[in-house]
Length: 161
Image 1 (cartoon, rainbow, N blue to C red):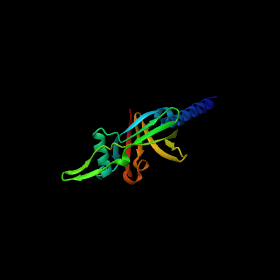
Image 2: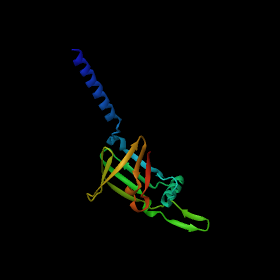
Image 3: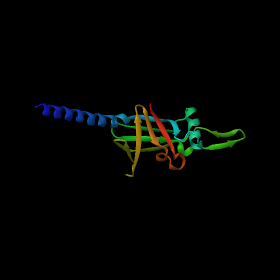
Image 4: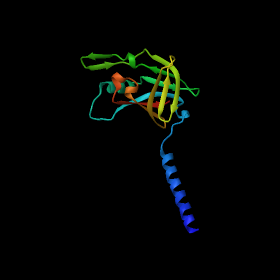
């Protein structure tokens, strides 16, 4: 009888331990993503390297320029608005000058979230799968998933409005 009790207690302890590790893994729900997200920062892991696209993005964000927003609706539709393709850099005698673009590109489609993978389906049915990191009101996407040519090696941080 004592052996069975010890085995039962050991089994419960083992199950509690294994369940606690599963609950530590953050699982995103689709409701976590619903809302409007705006680029708030562009970060780089290697702090010693200067990245011109990163510096331009940070400058425009500090000016209040809304470079990129996603609005994820509860019916799994989304609207993306981007000014990234319209950034113009002017060289002046005092340095580089960058103004917030007036023109905006709009993308609409469907979205689906499966754990940390966001699938975007455009109106043509083409799908793009992106790994995301979601921490409260911060959403981080690898820069190359936004603009492979200019933001590779960077992380684009969105804040929920």
